[in-house]
Length: 409
Image (cartoon, rainbow, N blue to C red):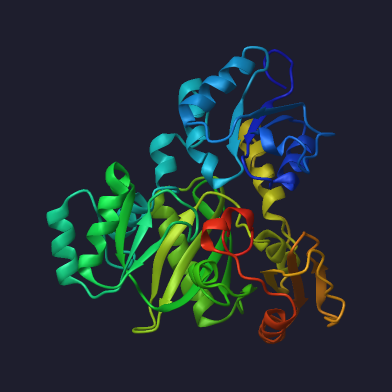
């Protein structure tokens, strides 16, 4: 209870339909939880039965506009903590914390988990391997970079999630038309050398600046390839005793320390270069991984990242200690794609390791679990090939906001 005798209150912001497990867990821990989402999601699958408040706002508000919207209803409803459930709401949450003087990551700390240029500079300063990169604010520096590094290059938005908005550039002179087209928005991008390799991700939980949980996974094909060229999205838990898993846990801990993560969940991506076999840091986010990665983590470990994130936020709010739950040591993986059929029938997929089937219009998806990482890998390879024939439908990258798989990962 607060000094006034009321229950502690938490404002959660999400402009994407996600985080239901977080909301339920936080509400179960003696918190008044209010959700702020956008008007078009007013009738979404939200657990309104446990919420103390529910508000909607127009889409595409700036963080400053969100601040004004929140402070209007905050005059009658106290706020003790602000949590952004989706990556695109992190700036608004940080601004609110600064304005209302609430604990948690402010604007500077948040940039290290949103701004791809900021996180790369911090990683390089800490001695962590990253692909060669440069900001594009000065054209002389860009020209020098293009003529002293090996192409192709990727022009990346500094603020987008996953592979959204990335452009691949084959020749140095091809960069300039893109920058000219972007105009004043050009400096919201960075230029990075394209490193061919396999993409991995680590789902993390931190408390008090210590990484308590780090689960390395490997994508079947890079998310950027899935988004721009199409295909089936897969990911799987790595063998915990493998050299790759050991190396990933090491670089994952180093990057979170370099970026200043204290309490919360993270989704971090790395590439293992084909050329030298080294891991390079790509990006991290202070959120739960999308594309049903949270469910894969839960089936493998017994730990639900959304619920644990809620427990962390409530523990920090109440000044209590967070304790990681007992973990299971199974392996899990997912195979998901956009489907031609409105309601795909996956009943022909009948391996006993299948533990979940995706029920979403025009999507086919399965999650498998086994005590053997090799069995999980084999099933994903088999099912991924079959999904291409049985279900797969192509969607243009410009329509990617309609799809969860491989885009909001």
